Image 1 (tube, helix red, strand yellow):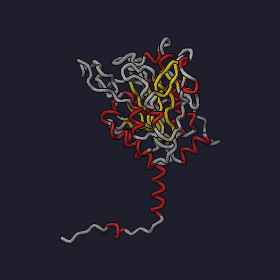
Image 2 (spheres, one colour):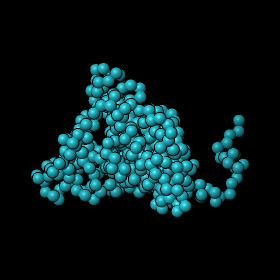
Image 3 (cartoon, rainbow, N blue to C red):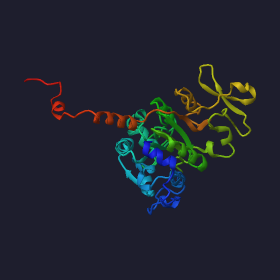
Length: 349
């Protein structure tokens, strides 16, 4: 984030500032999602998390695009904007770079962010603008009643693909890492504790932090993430990443992650490998190779062996910081408006 917002988070609320609670971040608007929608759980978690930032509500802004998730700003007592389809990162970029005192968050969905908004998303990420992007991924278009989305699995039968989708799905975190994202994480709507820890890490990060949140649409794509939530299966399917620890998972720790013959990562049986072969998770590695390989572990169809947690978190000057430094240098030079208007590329006609 900016120096101002960073210091606000580090120091907490000023001594004379009123202590905010979850209730302070609940608006008086009726929450209008389908009963059982995963958005309710995400909203509740965000509302309970925001007071911990120690930032006044007037210094927080949520910008959304178009979609079910994009109703988010109405339900928070921060500033917010329900903007244009796919363009939330663009609008948020202008806000963040012009107001260093703000904590700016983007709320978007898999359709909003990765279809019409794909170009805007990747450029916000590559610039490393001070934005926290929450990408709700339910693998379907919910607002427009159940068409396949850029993250829907191959062969998905929907209203717009009655014979099955022919499109290979995006892996949002692979895409983000391809754009050199400095912070990449994934969490699940029903895991409040895990989501809170991921949000805390994202809030402290300078630059663009993108958090993919698996979110159930119980009307048009129910149980899309059941494998990762069902108590009988999640132990063997969810890879909960912890910084500095060997990547071991399973109900009894029977699975682990090792390097394959090509230098990537693969899942193996813990009992069948040497302990030294088990990969230790390090989100702070300078290159994207480790984090990218983690994103490729899960099967795009079934989500078999899905990593959650912070995959990458590295330091790189934010676009905001670089822009402010450039403006300071420019202000030290005497301005010559006439010379600027005349320029050097002139012609006599």
